[in-house]
Length: 259
Image (cartoon, rainbow, N blue to C red; front, side, top):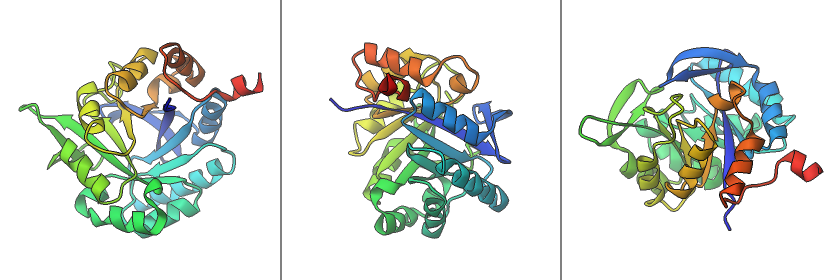
């Protein structure tokens, strides 16, 4: 049985973890290094850092935070935000990342996916897609932190990303981001059914059942969680327990292994 992953996302700005709703209304929720360590102990399978401002100064700050975090983590670390070239991917990997997420840059220059996959392997390249349903019911791709709509349709773009070398899709629903009403199962399943690489459901986790639904109904390979953990409403351990009770295979937490 395929093991499903629980990934904790840390949006980083100014060296601090922040969280908002629908990509706005950001608030400080803590130190990225200490939060990463806590979530690893709780049983997170991976940590994702996203630089949500993406200026050159913020990117340098994120890489330094990543270096300090990677020294302490034993689970994979993904870095995204402000990554525009294969050389940027190289810098992130040297800073300790196991994978690098590309979003706006891939839309502007899709060749960056191919160049990065050719240099470092598809397993290092994550295509991050921010999707939002328009008035016609079409899921469009948005860039620049969810501020700018593109003509791209989300499913077709996901297919192109994979064709160009992406080894994983991180699919975020802008409509559901921070709302805690559940993942957008419609677009998640549509993408999962049409690509042959893992799809990470992102945006909307409010409780453990939402994670179960993303895996069972939308066929997500992994689920990304943020706010409900940052606010102490649950733990990775508790989320995994519910997933396991629903018959979903997940890795044991460190506490379970120690016991």
